[in-house]
Structure formats: structure tokens, C-alpha cells
Amino acid sequence: MATDLTTPVAAPPDVARIQRRTLRLLFTTQIIGGIGVTIGIAVGALLAARIAGTAMAGLAQSCGVVGAALLAVPITRIMTGYGRRPGLAVAYVVGALGGVLVVLAAVTRFVPLLFLGMLLFGGGTAANLQARYTAVDLAEPARRGRQLSLIVWATTIGAVSAPNFAALADRTTRGWGLPPLAGPFAFSAAAFVLAAGVLLALLRPDPLLTARRLAAAGAPTAAAGPDLTPPAEAVVPPAPPARRAAGMRAARQVVRERPGARLGIAAVAVGHLVMVAVMSMTPVRLGESHSDADVLRVVGVVLSLHIAGMYALSPVVGWLTDRLGRRAVILGGVGLLLAACAVAGTAGHHTPRLSVGLVLLGLGWSGTMVAGSTLLSESVPAAVRPNVQGLSDLVMGLAGAGAAAASGFVMRAVGYPTLTLLAAIAVAPLVALALRPVPPTAPDEED
Image 1 (cartoon, rainbow, N blue to C red):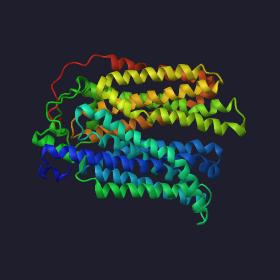
Image 2: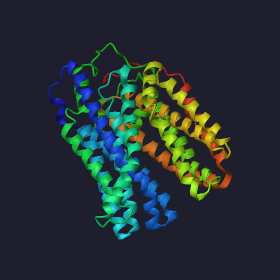
Image 3: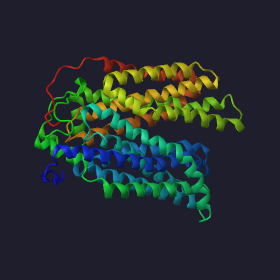
Image 4: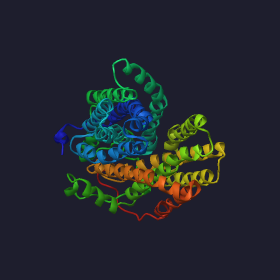
């Protein structure tokens, strides 16, 4: 654990200033990191197909997803011991190293190096995901959903602008002697290094360590004062002090004991599973009814609408999370996911209707992600919060990777409509968990 707990505690009025500065900084680095991640996603499959063959292209992309999930564990251990600043910076540096290895793999055409590079490239995604939790370390209970969703929304700017950067990077680096499609990963590595440098230099004081100091001193972690209490679903029992320095095992134990934490993790993981399962096979579905010359344009439009559904309205989702409650928005997100599966699954080859289904899918994902992440963060004490959040990202990433891998086999065996039906059935346990009443418990002594 960090020795920073002995540092004098900031006066409560300073907390609002620290939080505003933290949000501005995270918003900026999310744009930078989002550009880096999306550039890699945009050309990763094409580069893998060129080096390793079309059959291996999907596996290379999956390596990035699995890498983000696995890297969440060591990154959150760093955060537990030393704070958000070094944890986020290390994640971005690992992502940058992965980008460099991908460039070397493109130059040497060495396939194992490509897979290793894509695995480490997931560090950029891991950093972007952990940034949303950093946004709520010092947030007022009544504004946690909005402030977390603001950082999620910042990803939209990077995702929208990244394809233009990918084309520019490819043209620029070809003049340096790099092979086609390698240049975007070099730009991604530079973006990750820039984000890491900005965070190391400017994310001071560290929001997580500041929250711990305030909790240890009995001071409120929000500028509005101690009269703001967490919502009913976030009320949790105190954690034994012996768990403070422990890792994933303690995180699992904390989650088992806290209904709000269980629901938060389940919402994030199930929403991501359903979204990835349906989204990943939609281009294949579109390919069944469009010519090769036309399919890429149609896929681009449909997936752009889907990404807009995921991110564009996330501030509204955050506002609803604070206004209506975490559980209500999770259930609303589930309803949208079910509607998305129904619309997409019955669309046949009607592209406009399929587009509507993909927009609903993105909106449902946004509801479960924002409300679930907010509920999870406020349901556990500060001492184990990073480990629990890392556990959540690990479960979410593995759920998405498993859904992506299984969806292809399901699509081939029984078709797209049955795939959407199975995805809809997968939300049943989440509905049961969300509707289960939460027994009254004592407030968490650390929050």
C-alpha cells in the first residue's frame, strides 16, 4: 500500500477543484487514447490478414480484447498500491509497446510477434476503461453517473476522428519505409505515450489516494458535504481492515458479500456480452445481401450508427442514472438490449431495420455500462475498489471475447436470427438479479 496516506488531508472545498481538474484531464487523455485504440481496431484485422492470412485475422483482433481483460488485473494492483496515476500510465505504456511490436511484426512478417503485439496493445483499451472509474473517486454521490458517463462519452470524439488519422498515418509512414498498414500502429504507440506522459505530469493529486485520505480522516469525498448519501442499492456493510492489501481473491469476496457490487459487475459483463455477440456477426449478415463492392460502405454506415448509440448519448444515460437510480437504468438498458435483439433478429435483409436494431443495441450497452460501473464503484470501500473494478473489467473482457468467438459458430450453425434469440436469453440472469430486493445494511464506513 502507498505511504501517501500520511499526507495532510485537503480541505473539503478543495475536493471540488481537484475533481474538476481530474475530469478535464481524463476527458483530454480519453480522446488521445481513444484515437490510439480505434486506429488499431480500424486496421488490425486487415494487417493480420495480410501477414497471417484471412483465417487468422479474427484471432489477432481477439488478442487485443483478451489482452485488455488480462492486463486489467496487474494494472489495478498498481492502482491499489500507488494510485490511479501510475496505473493508467503503465497501461498506456504497455499499449504503446504493443503498437511497436505490431509494427516490427509487419516489417518482419513474424506472426507470433503480431499476436504478442496485439495482446499488449490491449493496454490502451484497459487504460481507457479504467479512466471511467477514476472519474468517480472524488465525485459527489448525486453526480457520479454523469461524471463517469462524461469520460465514456469522450471516447466518441477519438472513435470518430481515428479513421482519418489512420489514413494519414499510413500515407506518412510509407515514406519512411514502413509496410502498408503498419504506420497506424506507430501513431497509436505515439498517442499512448502522449497520454501516459500527460497523466504522469498532471494527474496530481491522485484522486484515489485523495479519496482514501479523506475516508481515513472521516471527511466527505464530495464537495457538497456529508448530507449526500449513496442510493439504496449502494448501501453496503463495512469491509474488514485485513482485506486492504489483498488482491483479486479479496475482490471476489467483497463482490460476493455486496448485492450492489454483484449487480454492477453482472450488468457490465452481460451487456457487453450481448452487444459483442450481435454486433460482431452483423457485418456477416449484411454481406449475405450486399455485393462485395457495396458491403464495406453499408457496414461502415451501420456500425457508425451503432457506435453513436453506444457513446453519443452517454451523458444523458449518466444523468438518468443519477436521477432515476442505478437499478432502474440497468433494467432500462436490458429492455433496450432485448428490443435490439428482437428488431435485428427479425429484420431479415432489410438494412434500415437492422440499423435501428444496432442503434438500440448500442443504447442498451450504454445503459448497462454506465449504470453498472457507477453502482459497482460506490458499492465497495476505497481500499479494495481498484481490485474490484479490475475484476469487473476482466470479467467483461472475457465475456466479450467469448461472445465474439462463439458467435461465429452459432451464426454458421443456426443463423443470425437464432443468434439474436440466444443473446436475448442471456440477459435473463441479469433481470433476475436486478429485480431481487436488497436487504437493508449498515452504510460503508469508508464511503
